[in-house]
Length: 141
Ligand code: ADP
Ligand code: MG
Image (cartoon, rainbow, N blue to C red):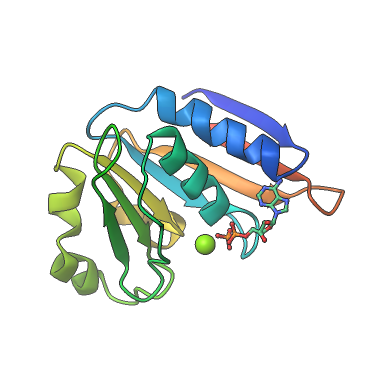
């Protein structure tokens, strides 16, 4: 396993990291986004979407669990599993089908469903840094 740490001094840094990550994504990629509330998981997800050239306005997947975007270089499936209390809920939305749909799956709060995350998942953790807009991002793949 390879691990890299990035110091993100502001949201601009987070945006450029997301765009850089997006460039290397291939069909079937699964990215787990973890870290506390407000750490920047959604911000990084939006940056990755921009890097994939998604033109649709992004909505929050908090209540729907998943939002789909088809306008980019690859289909993008953005999940927020914070409210998932039972693995059956994932089954119902077709989580497994999304994983195998040839797109990119971004899963916020994936640590809550670690058992069902596939092998080969890229784990990205965001933490608060020392300054207000600073974040520390660890990428494991
Ligand atoms: P999460 O999805 O982890 O709860 P969000 O991305 O919704 O977090 O919110 C992160 C908040 O922190 C946003 O208001 C964003 O503007 C702010 N922020 C400040 N600095 C950064 C940074 N370096 N990277 C990402 N977000 C940042
Ligand atoms: Mg979020």
